[in-house]
Amino acid sequence: MLDRLEQHYDAVPRSGARVEDFGPLTLFVREGPGWPLYARPTPGRSGAVSAADVTRVRVRQRELGAPESFEWVAETAPGLREAAEEAGLMVHEYPLMVLGPDAPTPAVPERADGVAIRSVGPDDPLLPSALAVPHLAFAQPGTRVGAAGLAELGEAVRSRAGDGSVERAAARIRAGLTRVAAAVEDGGALCAGQHQPVGPVSEIVGVGTLPTARRRGLGHAVTAALVADARSRDVETLFLSAGDEDVARIYARLGFRSVATALIAEPGE
Image (tube, rainbow, N blue to C red; front, top):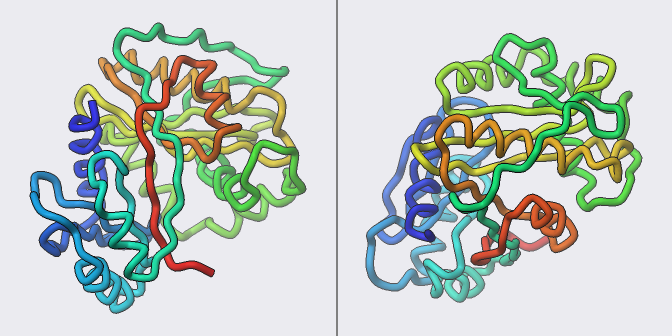
């Protein structure tokens, strides 16, 4: 299972990045605007990763103006945490959860708390808000109702207009690299998320609910829609990293089970 996830982790960034080889570490460098990328262990490379290896990558990331970020699975690269911490990085833990091929596909409600749940296509007018709402959600993490609402969502959509992000997402949807689902009310997305299929494996990413719309079951419903979409496209195994244990419990209700620990290393504040 973890080998399959490693193959997926390595494959997905390559569709929008160039790769720089640092021996036991691989640095993905974004080609053009978009979500910043990271470094991670090089698949198939044996031997320990040292603090010096981590530092070499950090120097290159600074040269590129990229975040000094590393992502990996604790169980597949057990020595990297010590090396990252020795190199001065702070390591954060997240539950890595899997929905295996034998798990039933969850039922997808047409509506959740009165809000429609549906897929979002490349030419859908909803796509800009479906891309913007997770940014607001992650800026106020957790599951509690927060302050950011429709006014902030409208501003987030306007601020991203013309930056090419919607066009890039639409191209990925057309190419089958990304699938998007959302909870929709009054023409805007109150919650949205994506999955990124590569063969029989897909990762669910970026599921976020507008902070003022939390505690209504929208994240659960959108994730169920993403699972159903993936299964309809012959994806057997889905996985995700939960933001914390409270979020993990939401995914557990859909059948996801913790199998490992996802780690992210970055400079401390």
